[in-house]
Length: 362
Ligand code: ATP
Image (cartoon, rainbow, N blue to C red):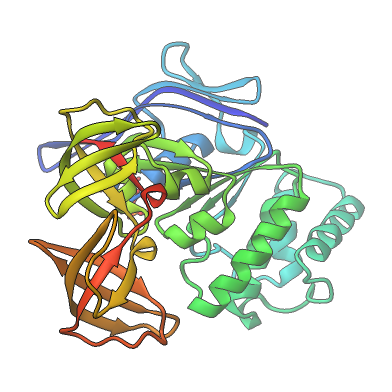
């Protein structure tokens, strides 16, 4: 089911100041996709989710779930949360500790007076789906974090919603379980014909799970795209920087050459993709991701996009080194394979492919 949001605003007032938690948001969330709201803490993700669910009342705008208008300031429409046909999974799972698994999952059906035989059948189906059949009589408190998360998912799915919403559902799990549960969740969701809206500030989670990502900043949607578009070809400096520690280098365009441009930068002349067609003479920002910077220890720079630098810091993080290289006045961040023969203080040559760096409007 598609969700359409227009002109949605929600302002808070604290200590005499106005906070624009949502600032005139227009957004269409397509049916049956995993749609993620990603952004730094305080950008308005949870407020937007809570407005869709009906737990928060916006100041203005409209929200349609499918063809049904569930909120309109102008038309004075407010459909309460329980009538919106949505399932929700929270960060804390909100599992009832005094109930067993069956009763937890059955809860939404019991509150809407579903006949007992139908409850048994639907709970069995939901538990089977999240691979917890056989756990019906287990007290909720005797489950691992990952299992509790699956109970929460079963409970959100049991009433067969057309839309399911997740507010940072994996943030209480440890790193390994988080990774496993992320994969499971992706599998569960792709099996269902369901629209999923997922809130996170975790980049990897967003990239791994989503069909589409909307990046938010200060109550607004800055950019929407699939994970590869957002990661490799963002149209926005804030997004490029927020996603994956981009190196952003200032300069101006000196020549256009097909899809590429020559760019006079703080560290020298660079050839880069210019898909935004920034005109010659204009200031711009070059974006190059750490994993696309190649290193050649103890070599002289040679050819296009090659520069001499000094390895300033090198931190071993297991699967790689994270390095900082000083090139001219700039520190560039890079990812280096763990077997590289390199030390702090080494003089090196860095280079990057013109197809793996791109210009953004300044
Ligand atoms: P996080 O990732 O930290 O959960 P978020 O992107 O979900 O953040 P929101 O919780 O939607 O952000 O908050 C958006 C802004 O609105 C923040 O500046 C927050 O402090 C403010 N805010 C949220 N709820 C309230 C409230 N009830 N009263 C006052 N300000 C609020």
